[in-house]
Amino acid sequence: MWKKLLTPTLIFTLVILFALTWYVSIKAEEYFSQWVERSNQVAPPITSTDLVSYNRGFFTAEAITTVDIKDIGHYDFHHLIRHYVWGVTIITTPVAATDSTSLLDGLRIVTDVGPTGAARSRMSMPQLAFESDLGQTLVVDRIAAEGRVNATATEGSWDVTLDQLRLVVDEHSSILISGFHSSADMTNLDHFPLGHNRTRINSISLEKTAGRPLVVEGLNMLGNNLFDASRHYLARSEISFARLKANDNIFQNGRMVLELRDIDAQVIEVFVAAGNNLRSRINTATVTGDDVTDLFILPLTNTLLASGLTLSLEELSLATTDGHLRGEGKAILAAGPTDITLEELLEQIHISLQADFDVQILAHINQLFSGTVGNLAAKEEEFRMIFGGLAQLGFLSRLEGDRFRLLVSYDDGEIKLNGQPFQLF
Image 1 (cartoon, rainbow, N blue to C red):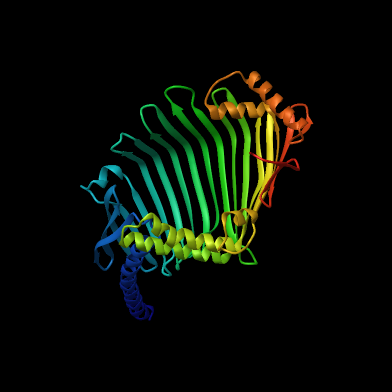
Image 2 (image 1 turned 90 degrees about the vertical axis):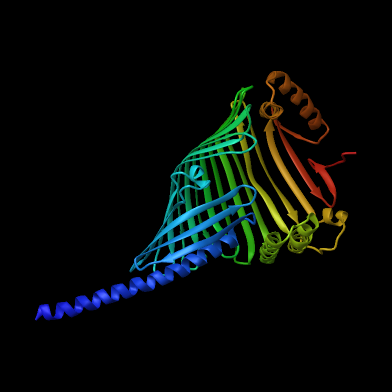
């Protein structure tokens, strides 16, 4: 009896599996066409992707796409698409015997697409090497990346790792980045991406044949952006490093936190619409500077003036072995009319800044930006005289020893230092 039941059940199951596989093969072709279309919507205007061919079989399909980058070249990719009952797997590699083969040698992208359309991609590449006509070279070692997107392409995430990146600018200078890792979780991808991201770099070295390199170690960058409960846009950025060394100057525990808020959601809507309008013009015609102003800058500026914004320096800190700098501040653009003069605009701006510092760290900062190796003791004495004199005039406050406090404010078109009016001329 079991054998009599088993045979029809097995046949029925096989029929269902084949039917589902056939259905998935049809949906895979639809998904692939949509993917090419979305790529063109989100890619920079100088980049376009074309579907050259799509040959659908029962269990597998093959497709060829071409990515064209203006003034750089075009790159052909082969896509092997395997159909399963539960979805498809797309394996992407460069097409052999093309100009892109040497540049993208070893590139492999594997994408799994589920029955709902949600996708997960993993990319690996042993090395990316590129040389420009001007002799600049870029070499990236061991690239690994993973990305996810939901069925509606509104939510997603990414995770990218690079072992090392070297950019040779010319025969005298180069940039070396070691241990790069970036990740993010984003929403609202189909309109204006929101979410949080983090980038960590073990070290960045700016090397020159003449002089010692500038080295930054333990660099971290954090970013968050969202719409709050009152439908205002808020973005927060943090950047910090453990150590920075240039010549004989060593800085530690650098940190800066910025927050942008109180921007009406309508500003973002105008930004997206103006960007799409400008992109459309770029794709169909030559865009002049006046077009950029009329299509993008003016609509965005007018909406921003009507909304207003607040930019806060939540924290600024930097230390050396014999001094430190700390600061915080805020800049406010009050909401107002859009048809205003420059003088009226300046009256809508309010700025406040507080900075505590030692003359020792300023001497190191001066030497860092001047690019010279000088007598630090002499520069410290010079700063000691300058800031001591400003403190006597009431423009600064002396906290203790060689440590001072600077208070800067700008209101109603007037600059004040430590509460006293200050005029440049």
